[in-house]
Length: 123
Image (cartoon, rainbow, N blue to C red; front, side):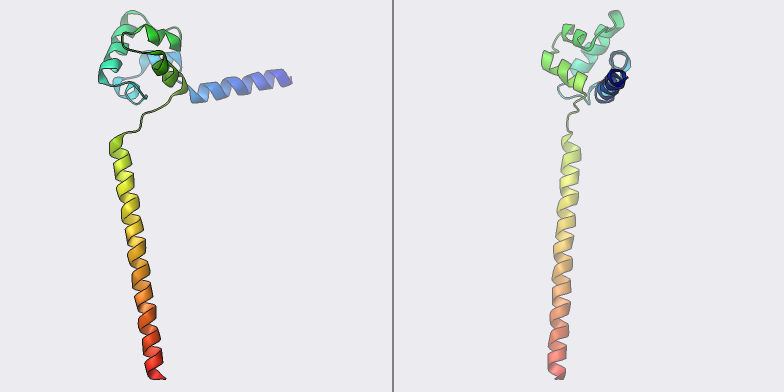
């Protein structure tokens, strides 16, 4: 019983973290291009190849001209490439948030200082 549960967990985990052959055979160009190492030309080559020869295993993608074993591993692990646009946007957001925090602290400090001066002047 424990062996069956263990096997089920291993299969479920591997399915959750990898692209299936079915997905590789049906994924649109935009989805393929999200995978690290696959650009527009390689996505087109994969789509062209799979029309005449559907993939039976993820490793079959290595038969596509220009697709290396490392890309096959990325597909299997579902490793997505980072888009520079998104990382620039998030860095800009983080930068503006931290700048706002600094400004807020400066304003608070100034207000506290002004209150202290007023309190001292009243004494």
